[in-house]
Amino acid sequence: MTDSPELASRRIAVIGAGIAGLSCAVHLQAAGLHPQVFDKSRGLGGRLSTRRGDTWQCDHGAQYFTARHPAFRVVVEAWVAAGMAAVWQPRLAVLGDASSHRPDPTLARYVGTPRMTAPAHALSQGLTLRTQSTISELRRTAQGWQLRSAETGWLDELFDAVVLALPAPQAGTLLAGHSAALSSVVGSVRMRACWAVMLRFDESVNLSFDAAFVNSGPLRWIARDNSKPARGGTETWLLHATTDWSDAHVEADPDTVTAALEQEFVRLGGTTATARAAHRWRYAEADAALAIGHAWEPVIQVGVCGDWLQGGKVEGAWLSGLALAQAITRPDTP
Ligand SMILES: Cc1cc2nc3c(=O)[nH]c(=O)nc-3n(C[C@H](O)[C@H](O)[C@H](O)COP(=O)(O)OP(=O)(O)OC[C@H]3O[C@@H](n4cnc5c(N)ncnc54)[C@H](O)[C@@H]3O)c2cc1C
Image 1 (cartoon, rainbow, N blue to C red):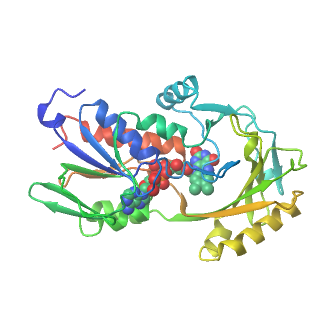
Image 2: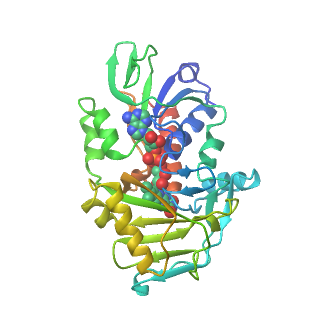
């Protein structure tokens, strides 16, 4: 909690309710500031995401997360204790050239339970959230920052600071004309696409593993989603295409993508599904994530956080949000 009354009265707009934005908001609120979180989606979690049908579900973004940093381990252990995450112990295989990827058998792989979004919901408790708010423009006035929402136009509230917890290109759009320094940081990172295909089956697929790193062809990862803890019994497989294939097919029709990737799954020993769906992640991952944690421009009171600033994974996103919150609440910050 901050001792500075001036700091404590500050209202911060956090744009993006993925793990980075939520982590930043949690830490700002814990320091006594007033964050308000905006997201364009109906739900929370960003790329930590689960598609749900009547009798099935499938994680189509992040597949699992690791916890190496002591601070993040504490948080993950609390999620586990609260039933919001659990260790997933899939039978793992490597298909194709096995020498290029050796999975670490000792690594604890965590998933949200009962869905991948559970950790985001855990973080969001007690925060002020506004979903279905696509922030399309920022305006700096003498009284503070004003936000324009694509759904409702210019918002009435004014904010003392703005956090952009978005993939680099989306942060870049909002920063245009406001900060050359931050624009240069976001412009230094290229984000790659990933096509995800979810396959549902009436019967168990006869493969001897639950997940596999695929080192040849258009797929890079396949997983039996219902092998994760606390999932329903419906047999569901998730396929992720490589970034090269996904970038090359980024504007392709989802049915064409689904047919091509399902065919690959069958070639790897799988069977034809009874139902299928596709999702395109246009900004799935940074080509080469930075390791600077965050970037903060104190003169205009705008900062950026996200996985692309800290290693490119769920853990990095959480650490990045923490790092930006610490920069904002540092007493010597002008
Ligand atoms: C296919 C895939 C597989 C992955 N696999 C793994 C894995 O196995 N392990 C792992 O650790 N990580 C994995 N990741 C990466 C992981 O998902 C990310 O590192 C992490 O979720 C990023 O969190 P973030 O908060 O930085 O960004 P995001 O989760 O992208 O959050 C950004 C949020 O901003 C919102 N938003 C965007 N524009 C606007 C706007 N204009 N106005 C309002 N809101 C907006 C979005 O809706 C989103 O909720 C994977 C990602 C993908 C896509």
